[in-house]
Length: 107
Image (tube, rainbow, N blue to C red; front, side):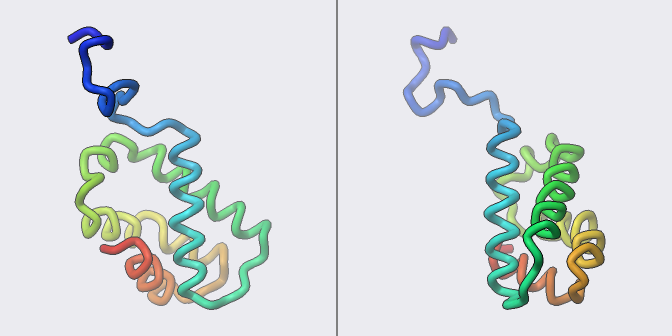
């Protein structure tokens, strides 16, 4: 179907998020998890954590976009793929970080 015949809400949607969208979403998700941890994390560590998370999302982008509506599966993926490295980087307990992320993300 040509672009001029698509409904307004479907124009410009390729199905995969842009790099900017990924960075913004990762930043928001980690911000919400940090709020629930109630711990101070230095800004440079926060930035490194966001970069790490964005790289992991980029590496698994197809699977994540296929499961975008399954929050439980996305949280399970985050627990196994991201949480350990992020907990080591931020020097926090991994189980607390996983619980904070799951609570903030809704999975």
